[in-house]
Length: 245
Image (cartoon, rainbow, N blue to C red; front, side, top):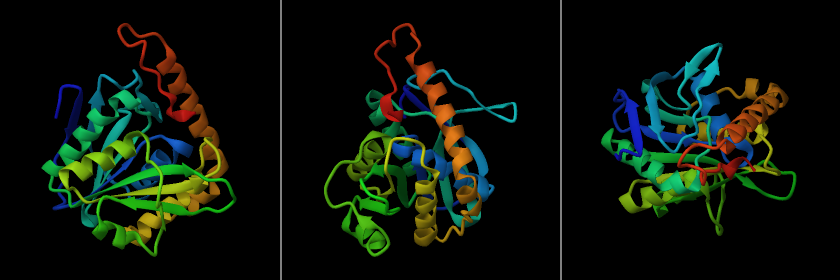
C-alpha cells in the first residue's frame, strides 16, 4: 500500500474470498452491477478506499454521507465487492490497481473478477470475457463470448495487469453495450453471468424493471462527477476524468 491509495477496511471473515471490482466506465456497467449485487445480497460494509487522486465527492444516500469507493462482504458466499461511484483517471489507475490487488492478496483472495463494459455495434446483449491464465479462461469458456483480441482500458485493465504480474487468478466480464450512456440492461446480463459462474443467485428482476429510472439517475450522477472533476483544484489542473465519455 502506498500513501497515494489507502484501504481503510475491516478484514473479511471469509477465507480465500472472490474479490469483485466494479468502477464506472463504458455504460457504467461496472458500478451499476456491483452496487446492485451489494444491495440484493445485503452485503456487510467493511470500509472504503481513499486516494488524493479521487475527486472531492461524498456520496449521499437518503441524506447520509458515504465514501465513493466502498468495500463489502457476504461472508457465507465468500464474496467481497469493491464498488465505486467515481471514475478513475488513467494516471491514477495503476496506483489504485496495485492498492486493490495488494489488499486482495493480504486477505488471501483466491481470485478477482473485474466488471466492465464493451461497446459493440449490434443489438445483442452478450457478456464477453477474458482471463489472466488458461485455467481461468477454461472456467469461463462456454459461458461468455471470449474476448479474443483487443484491449481492456481503465481500472479493470490495470487490475488485470496487476493480477497477471502477481500471478493472482482473475477474469474480466464485459457487458455488451451500444453507446457510452448508462446501460443497466447490460448490467443485468453481467450480474446473471456472475450468478452462473459463482452461484450468487442474485434476482435481477428489480434491475430489469427499473432500468429506465436507473439510466436517468446514473446519468445525473455521472454529470455531477464530471462537473466536479472539471473544477480547478490547486496543483491538479491536469486531472480530468474522461471515462464517462
